[in-house]
Image (cartoon, rainbow, N blue to C red; front, side):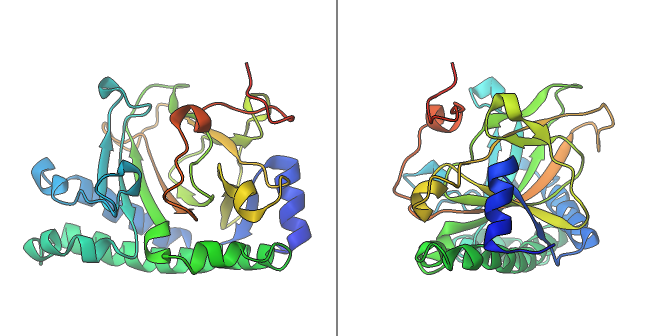
Length: 275
């Protein structure tokens, strides 16, 4: 797989995502996911102590545990953990209280390692783009990277065959690197009409421009990836887990606010919202 600027641009034009070589083995990603699922079996009151935000007034800056429920008005039923380089500093009190708890220590040790290696993969992609769009590397990796890079571990709750686990949307922020999923179901395209299931060709990550990437890189060529997740079968991991996924997210300006409607309304080729 030849990761060149022209190759990246060609894939974005053709399918709105790019497969990139991933040096992290499937076994290690599966292990990291299992450590995350083990962490989620902790009592709710313990998990809640790991809720923290880089900016306490901005829910988009979560740097720890988060839960979402459709019954409470959210778009998806899921639990996730945002691991940032700053997370362990912000969570030093609950980490100290849970010292010796293998479910906590295994998860954090694994998250730290995967975060570092995944960040290097994303940096290779961004460095390649920076040769033709100077400044994009600095925006992501030289401006508070400990806060702007986020490794998300997510667990989706079962919803039934053919149901949407994640409604179609653009990721907020600048870009994302999907590292692994427990099952098929991730679909991507330019809009609702072009959504196709992603089938990986080996051990690869999926680079996806997010909502602000075209602005960040100063090129309308890099349109954001419209994507969703559909549960393909009733073969669940367990009664409480439909699917897990690991994704690295990057942002350039946490002060910039994209609304729910912005990120959940597909645009046509001309940049207009689909009706």
